[in-house]
Image (cartoon, helix red, strand yellow):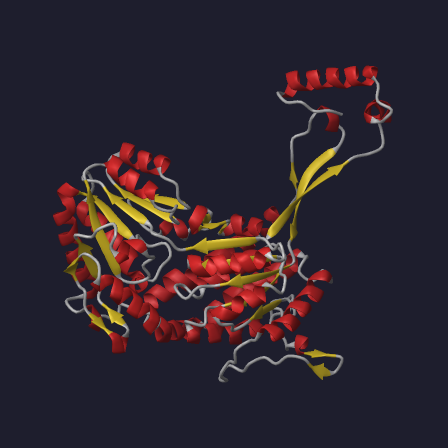
Length: 507
């Protein structure tokens, strides 16, 4: 772990009262599953550390944020190797979409933390002219962060950056579907972060709801809707607030007035990045009937350019995370529409070729379930009104995408559909920016994160009114026994307040 100076120090948290109570795994050792009973001890230790005020000082938070960056820089090769083993993820994708993204968040928080921690003063009114009205951001306590296998590093560490910046203790649970990455985080976290405040556990999906029931101060979950519902239900039992970043059917409208070649490149990159295993990628395309053939041909050309004639041999193309996801994606592919590009599947390698489907029906399996694989169905519409109506018939998605040269088309798609985020003429980028909040709405989740929004998610904005004891000669009007004269004076004061400030304020 790092001390306040940022230098490596011994794991002083592993010994209390002369007895060993925990043990850091060595970097060469296998990691064991963390059971709910073990989480009880970790939660107690984190809560004791939080109540002692360990995380409150700015210097401590800055040191921990710097330690996150140091961990990623010193172990870049280890993360590349782990994600290569888990997802056949190319080094380029690991560095750009996982490691750099987390480092950007940590550096941004580091540079802005002093400003974020300052009280926010609010407008005074007639009755608070001589008072101070402000909001103070205080940490929630001990938070629980669950990442997903699609992006196992960033979905754990980006929220963790926000939790650290806000002054919380945290327990993170990387997805055990990506075994090597989860074990790497489990080994590294104790070496870089404070051993009393921050812990990583290895828990299966079936154990997570039991861990949530231990009563945290906030639960942050990224994953599918089914698991998200279970987590929310478990958190509700203890009235624990939750942030849910959930998958969904992200529509992508392609207008006939667009640059087809550029559109195809950007859609293909987003959909087939990480072998299609992404919460924010376009899920299906609604294109104008006039350009379907051109768009499909352009997508085919892009895939040839990106991955060559045989994507299986490409070093830039990934694999399914496990056989369960492989079989589910392959079955949807085979039972939906017509294969226009790709379609090959090899179970032994968990390989599914980048695939484009046409002649897809709304009732096909590919349109009824979330797709976490390299398959994109292309459906046609006669106009934008049809596209908007189709999108609005479905559950609210995490993302909506629109490609058009016509600003009116973009404006209508943005204003007449509801989604967690919106992006025109590109894909996914809005979900990666530190200055924009990212989260769902309705069935695609609740709450948001990134940058300042992560800090706010893991903070409580406490309203504070700092008032003296002067002017009791005025405030006495509110006290019993009530009489008509005092009521008339109060009403008169309200009238003055309404005229001067546009709203009513009773003293």
